[in-house]
Image 1 (cartoon, rainbow, N blue to C red):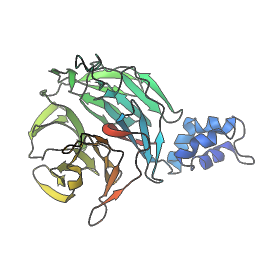
Image 2 (image 1 turned 120 degrees about the horizontal axis):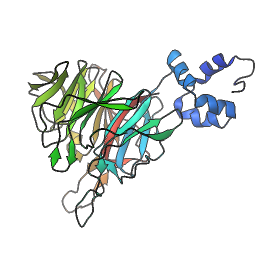
Image 3 (image 1 turned 60 degrees about the vertical axis):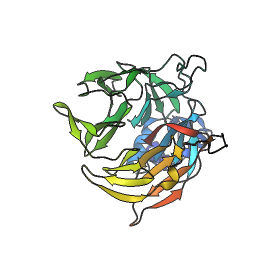
Image 4 (image 1 turned 90 degrees about the horizontal axis):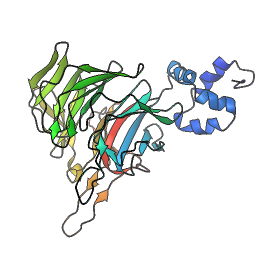
Length: 343
């Protein structure tokens, strides 16, 4: 690498470049080869941590367009489009998505493209494929596949490793198998099976440092302990769930609740979302983001409206308030995946 900035040691120059916002990195790359090499180096991202300039971005994928992901920069209220996920599966859906080790991981899932004659999901209901997006070089790469193909499963990060559990291998076969992935070694290993499977999709939440697996429609929750999975009965309301600063929030019947183990507190009305389906609700930094979705036909109007809207519930105020963020510039409609990425 040649001198980055004249009259400055490269170690100092790297720390200067580390303060540049991520969305400007493509412009830095065209200045000269040494700057391009610096922007695509791990040293720059280590320096971003050291000078406290790392950014938290929101990653979103929707039904339309196919296999496209976008990043949201909350500091500048802008969207960045990533290269197309190079999966051979059309309209990849029902996958797991998390971020760890500075990368975005998309795991498993199958096709959401239905054959109009047979009703089959393009012959690929569940896969074991794993893709990692590296923001340093801005490319997707294939990683070692999961031991068991699965879709509609629980997925989360525990101590830097990716845990997956449950889900379906076909549209009729649910599983209780669980496994864990080490992104540094690119290796999967089995862990104890869930206590039980269920004929519905499941999701994972980290509450109090513990993995909670929740099946849609069930009131019991499976929690991972050092002795395996334990089942707890909770009186949680049903609906989209997310965790913000260790607290669980649930949207149910047009209201958002803060849910404790055996009680709940009304936070704010969310009546405008009662007509919207297929949206994502995710805790991002200190707020709750409600993203995308569709509004179905009403009366004689058979048009389905695919939405790019982003609504933000600011929880830090004494009275939480709704605000609008910038519309997604590419993605719209049913949200297939959502995660937070630290760069």
